[in-house]
Length: 305
Image (cartoon, rainbow, N blue to C red; front, side, top):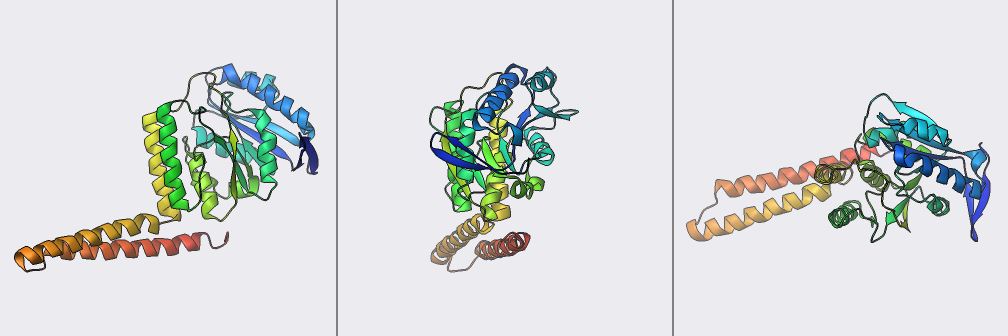
């Protein structure tokens, strides 16, 4: 179980450690059986059945998800009631035996044949490898546009190119991923949080292009509700990990407004008004809050730097 193994996909050698493939599942009886079987077939092709596990976290399903997954050969962990996708991810990460974790959707969107490509890239010295969905893989035009916006915002906040912030298909080193479990929300935003946390901690993140198939069954994501939540989490993580990128623009805007208002009142009334004083003071306070937040963030990550 603990021994390393070399396998090949095509002509590309891959060095493998013990592997846990984690699938959060809620009412996925229609897809979970075929998904688990395909994963086992891929593991057999790679020669990794003896050093890999397929772990399904049953998130309070009311259908036959658990029975179907178990019949297909998965190891099961149960939630007595639905806690959310992120909560299932955290449960799976805690229960997993592998030192490399691969997260996949249980609805058939992710192709197990891409697992060797994720592991290959991980073995190039990376700590997280994300399957970046290409054009045509998004569920709708609206969701594709929203994800593009998230990617640009996250790239600006982290200072790194983020190709797919919300993809749930990724391979990570277990010890590093578990460092951030306390940050992960219980809803659908765990990819957002984990990606930005890895960047802030100075861990290496890479991307490989993938094609995501159409899901089997009904999606549990609500675009407006969860889209708004994604944006809030981006700014929350940005404030937590790169505070000055939030506070500095606000402080600058207040300073410019103060200067503009002072210029107008000086020309028209030849005086310095209370509004200008308030805006100047607010800009200084906001900037100082950003500096203090940066120092707090640096202390939080002192051991990981």
